[in-house]
Image (cartoon, rainbow, N blue to C red; front, side, top):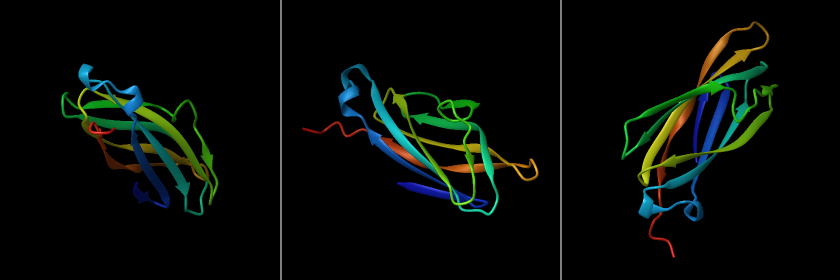
Length: 128
């Protein structure tokens, strides 16, 4: 698991290689990642947008942007957290991701960019 804290917002990511959904012979590797966003600040924030940078050893880097996360724009009061699971397909068994959440401080409407820490995706293709 990797973790980063930006202005009191803690983002932790745990990645899992999904061997049962992958097919290395067809260059198809599936990974899931669990993201936990914890508000350690004294302000209330709402997650508005996400921006991911996806690196695959077999392809050019990709940028994925959009509103919210898995269809949600959670509001986090001080001390609250939000966890979601998503996935990524790679053509190689080796890649990494990192990104930014844009969050709004509900008290004054100010936007902040919260770092999503870089994490590696490495397929365990030598499993039993």
